[in-house]
Image 1 (tube, rainbow, N blue to C red):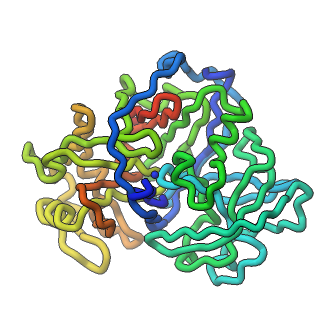
Image 2 (cartoon, helix red, strand yellow):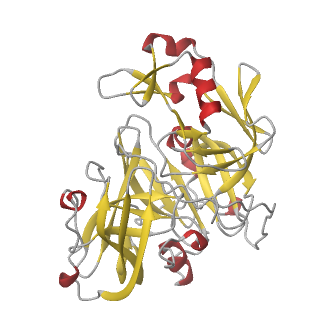
Length: 379
């Protein structure tokens, strides 16, 4: 969700921990930028193909909010206080609103009551994050954080003291799942803390995003439930160990290359609702689709959706087809608009963000042990 620092950059034991996600109407969070360019694949002793789902009571659902954002429940403190957060591979920080925050956005969300937690530990460290839809500042604290049956004790996390632009967002905070070097607060991300504590036997997590259905979406930790995808996982090495960015070969439409013609970089971002790219290329895609601007969106006739061709994203020589029914969405009035959006990052290289529109179609596995992403057709 926080678009990863593109300049600063973004077993299976006996169970997979599955966190139900819930989709929410949200804006993209932007981080800075950093170009890291090494082709690097770390080999580990385990193979993910050997990790399989055996069933477990360690499950927790994610909710789909209007096909635009997926939100899951976590708790912080002792006794536990509940929050709805976005599980975001574009950022690395966990934060929720604090009791000190008086911003209008904080008043519409659940705030952490630090005095009510016996395991709370404050620090004097402050941090700031700027997003595409707003910004926040806060302080770093420590407490017990629970994701389903996973428990991270003395987990560093952020407490916002001021928020701007988040008032109407249907989530309380963000749980970042990117690499530690992307952290704006400098705190160890919760996935790394759980891994270091031995709570997760294999350093992998995976997402299944439902379409249209409010329930059924999950994020799973420590392994992969093969019932959520068809065929085999296709593995894509990261451009650089340290962020969920891969090399994309091209984007095609009716057998013609329409973007990424010389190869480009793409962030696989579970916190982004749409597919974001450079303005000239996105404008060209809108034109090819036959979409017309209205406000901040580009609309097409809903009756034309069945006649529109697929758009193909070629990654690591594999074609990932996105049919029109996947890249055309409906607004609250039932009008159809495209899922392509321009980003405002100023980068020396062509850069795309593959958000939930892409990930609804393709089940995704984020393998920290081998610095790679696995993709397969979602069921």
